[in-house]
Length: 556
Image 1 (cartoon, helix red, strand yellow):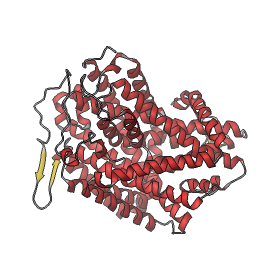
Image 2 (cartoon, helix red, strand yellow):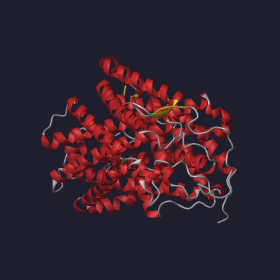
Image 3 (spheres, rainbow, N blue to C red):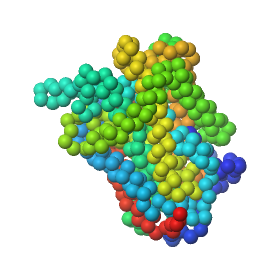
Image 4 (cartoon, one colour):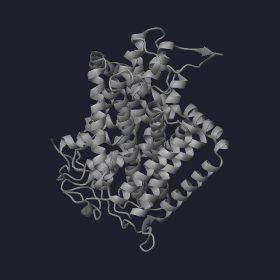
């Protein structure tokens, strides 16, 4: 979903170019500061137009350029480095990621139940910019398109296979990938545990991460009158120092987290789209194909930045959402319908029963699952959170905190459960019926192997490839807008050339990481940028509570 879809209903795109963050409506605790948006920016309007926040843009852009060049030049030398980096961070800091994820969920649930939940984003007199149904649709579209396509079949199947195989101990240590203690030899228990573990990774925890960032940005921009950047969230902790280097560091971390989180998703998308093209058209699944695909899609995303999102990508996003739900309905109707419909509620029950054991960071021996899956996921969601959080914030003005958090946690999570139940549950049913092709396939091919057992394989597989590619385009396009807003000091109408710069480097970073270590390198950079930004988000939790306590609350 493209960020420019946050235009107020009826507002023309050209009007949005002049739009700043709307002023609070009604009595709010506006933060008085002498800082003016753009005062630290450097700009030029001749050969190439730009308007960037000098410290944030220069440091982050130069660092990313240097990283990209190093990764492309020293491809083979960096492969062991990325392996070691990922393994170190996930094995030594898994407890930290799990605890942080639990804190985000507890904060959101606590605010829903507390009187602070009645605070209205945008001020007590603010009204929602979007209808309830339109808002719900955009909340889901904001987050996980490529991930759902890549992992919709592969993750439930991976957890099912590992759980069914049970615990494997070699030289005194577990070497299996089963969650918790697995379910050796018990097909139904393995199915239940595999689906519960999958939903754990796509349910309340990731959406709580997004909700924390979105709520923090919305509160301090719409109610406090500060720029729409991460540094604004820390005014209660740092005061006027957020306009100096402490704030610069926070925004630079947000830029790094977003670009590497997006690069990870784009890399996964390239892997799956290439595998699908090979499956359907026998196009070689080589690095050359992946590079060509990333370059082509990045070019389309760049063109959409130049042409204006309203002229094409918004419509592509809407078509993509329609295709995604059409594909899901197709699988429900022509797949094991009874298993899917019954499994939805059974999977929710299994998730509710297993969420506490799966959330526990201590006293467990399922190291591969906890570190290789959960810790990576939490770091990946956190690295995506500035991108998704800013989008959610910009479409949620006028909602109370309680409405906001309930919707952001529940609506997308339920749709994710339905998606995983439909695709993952169908794959497991096919496997239990005797088809081994899904279990034997690589992660990026499992979706296409599952679709091969249903009618209209060529059509549905092609739709799957289209979904991945368009999610790829809209994520890259929207991500460049978010990064540019941060690197422009909170300006939402920055010049187009700098958006082109960020859009281009999202693709180049994804290429560099794929060539330097494939999916391992992508995961390593998502985790390494997610770690410091986790610390930022933990500070944001305190700032949210502090900020809400000064706001006027509704009595009903």
